[in-house]
Image 1: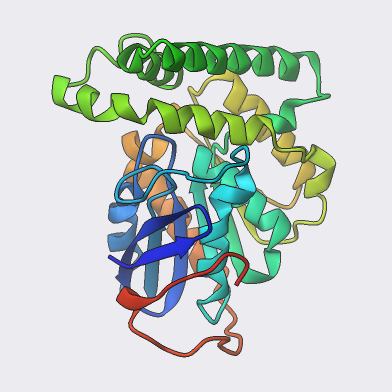
Image 2: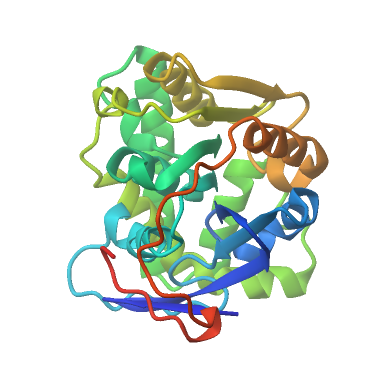
Length: 294
């Protein structure tokens, strides 16, 4: 797979298909392979590019000296978008959705459409209603527990708390032991993901300028924090299409994959990419080096 080098690290990118680009960003603890079934459904007319976000899969850890921010996570993706030579459809789930929302706000000219699957943009819950504050307090407490577990070296306990919050009590212990052993070391990056979100200064008013065709997907049985974020996004982006996946929780791209992928493909089909003049020379993507801000 091609690699993207940027200031602070490098990421690996799953690259499938041809022509019209679709960039898909995974959730915390996952990898770009989360979107492989979507690649199959997009067909030959589309090219899926799904990076392993910093610290996940084949990507390197964060080596920057400053505090980790959403802008740092987005740097490699932003550069990838800039080198495609045409706008791309952007899809993001959970933490990947928060990164996608950041890119839609800061680089909308590089996008053809936006799909947000329960983006965990917790910063949008600030200064909201009582229900928003209650949801923010709950997720802030969970983030604190994860940080404490990391400091104590309890990787399994911390990641287990993370999984059970999103998927329900007992979800962690119900996993095969080998999966738990693979997930637990990723706790350090999950803590950084929370740090990046909570430190983001953007507010709900900052989304007013997003005019992209947008699809917002929510699980019908998701946690309060995701419900409240989706509610706030519907207020900020009134033209966005909104779909609830009945019976699904926060991990709907995994548990209800076919239905979620069907909605994503339909949204992309309805908003074809308008080509623009390429800004880079064609080269072998396996040898491409991407720099931030390109």
